[in-house]
Image 1 (tube, rainbow, N blue to C red):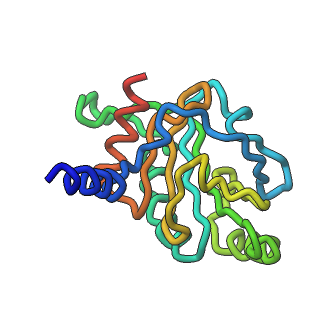
Image 2 (image 1 turned 30 degrees about the vertical axis):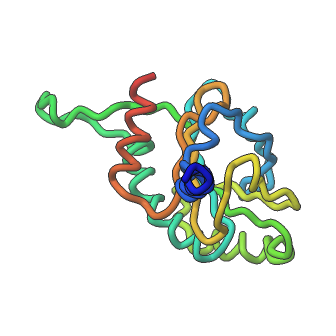
Length: 186
């Protein structure tokens, strides 16, 4: 009887691996580039503010990443004023970094320049400063616990570059609420 329990427990532990396995770890050093070719070193260049990062490795992941752009921009970037002093209309004034990062690794590096231009053509100019591009051999699979290439991954970095929250997949209100809670607590 005991011989059966141990393998079953091991299988259950691996089958239900938590998505936040990287929480509490420092975000790995990653050099990205903005539209103008300026280098941005994560997390070094974002220290001092909370930083939200959305990363996509494939066209499928990029499509899901796009579901996050407007809600994240509207929640954390757009400045709102309360109207008529109504306390329910008060919005937090977030002072954060927000970046969406298409990741070009392996063979995808060969098309990164064309893909960057295509993304630029399809993106509202107002969002240019929130897009970074990564092109390189390193996939960050182990460091950031990426399991699938076809879903986007999101990270909240604290002011020192440590991962405070991690999630993946399409946008949903519960994930946004969790991100807001983490930032508002600090």
